[in-house]
Length: 152
Image (cartoon, rainbow, N blue to C red; front, side, top):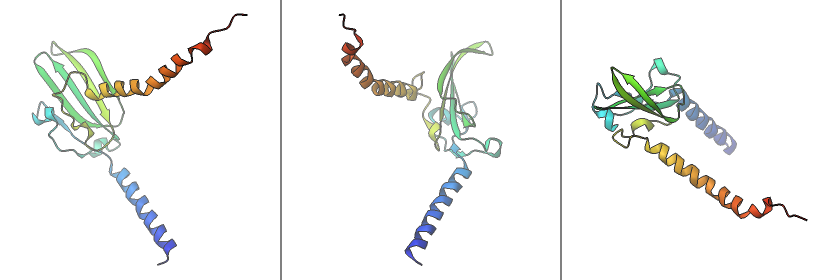
């Protein structure tokens, strides 16, 4: 085989591997702490999303904080719901605070739910945003003299 044919074959194989991995879908932890106590710690192996949610591109983790403890539910999702907490929801005459975390790579919803009430990944995101914007604030403050008008 010539060098050119080897390159074409190599790129064709890479394309095929990339395409097949996209078709295979995402692998997520799928469990409920009501049925499996290991679901709280995230020590459940991820599995291929089933045909019901075959269009899933995201993994999701719900944490419901009740007065008596936590309920954790991990699954596949077709939607990116981001990271957010819904205020109070009433379930069986008990107040529940529900937080949802969505992510987009295999097994990413394994993070332990024994962590703080607000998802740590959201706190990291806020810190990253602050660090990202800090240079702009410093630059704006140093250029403040340009905003002031000289009086003639």
